[in-house]
Image 1: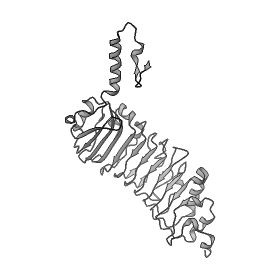
Image 2 (image 1 turned 45 degrees about the horizontal axis):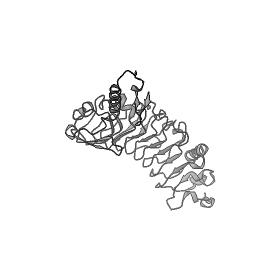
Image 3 (image 1 turned 180 degrees about the horizontal axis):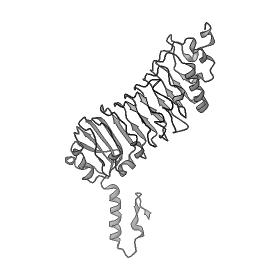
Image 4 (image 1 turned 90 degrees about the vertical axis):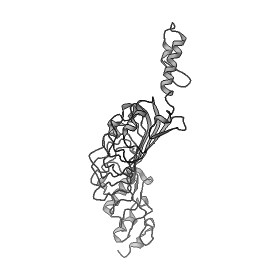
Length: 340
């Protein structure tokens, strides 16, 4: 095989010399056409509830609105000859509650987004091998009936880079995610109140996990509920706007500690030494001074039970922690606790 100027392998390059140049040319055009001929928008009258435009790279992108059932969409992927679509956005479609197996046929798609639909669940059978092997971004946002995340969906998407499942109604994260390489997950703005032990341990490359605006409590984050096995150099964990009034028990981290831990807006009133000293020790051991715990917008009393902070070697990791009287925790001294 050789490669032509547009990077397409020409299997005909090794054809017998007796084969006419017309045959070679026809074969080459077929190969090129397989790559590019169907990368154009179909006629608008064939797109039902969808509109098509070409993105900045000249690849078709679909936006579909007011979809009431997949029967309105099926022919777009099976009958119009599309082979590659940069994105499929399905928006404002509360009547769409589920998708059939192989919904996108064998179309390669970079990003699929569900916004404000009636989607209840999504399983891996929706994706063909072709679609699954090319999908880089999956959005499931503002779907008020979406309550369950199947544990094997992400494992079926081998090149997925970003997974947004926010502003839905996820209530609990149970069992364990099957092995996935996705590095970025946004599960914010749900109703998550519990996480099973080792739930995230199968996320081998996870480096950013967002779970703000949920219903997690200090007690509900049990042992190993935050077990991570991903990026050894970085782990950003956003738990802001939950109900972690006592922070996160060290036992919740079943392995590697988060490097950047966001605990803003959790109604934390004190930094319990048993909890926070252990976390600071582990963070500093693993990441040094690059680690931090963000504690803005809490209600720290800074009473005698916080006197331990003054002498702790890793106190500098406590960022934007402010006492209710306006003092910064980073500025507390022995004199602040002389009456204890």
